[in-house]
Image (cartoon, rainbow, N blue to C red; front, side, top):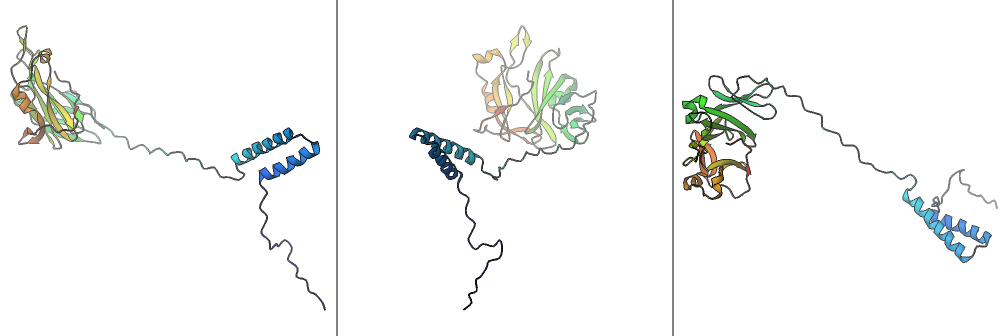
Length: 263
């Protein structure tokens, strides 16, 4: 009887490939043979074992072929297009620093707070009574806030040295600035000159609300209380009925005083 022996093709293997022997086992077997050949004492075998552990730790610290992921560099946002602002006119009554372009208070057939260029903005200004009667007596300043621009009109006295009244203007989401009087009560007199009231209303922003708070403006406020009329006028204000009108008490949330040039 003829026996037929099956022969596997060259290079083929039915058994799965053997797993590579761990580095620690290879090191231990090799160094053990080295220690036996050298006839090392037990202390020598301990040193051999420590050497294997050190080599295995080094091998595991950076596995062969391991991929190390690194954070991709953050891409900065491309700069936006540059905004071109119109040059300021030389006859502006006041300039309010704003972004992207400053606002200037000008008289172009009516008082307006405006900016030109690529980002035009315009607010009509409804003059407070003293400024409408005598425009030359009013000095202007202002600031841009989260609620829009605020304007301050200081009304000079007859001699023009010190203000005798102070008004605050705001648009509060509209296109027209209207005003409210910040000074109430009898003025204080120093050396025969009126220097304004001891207390005044000052603007603050509480979230999305404009609030007028009572604050001392002269040293006498350290020992004198504010007048009751002024306290009654403090609170939240809104643009209503052609002016800034008190609509309620100040909210309980924290408020931030507006940085204005108040005399």
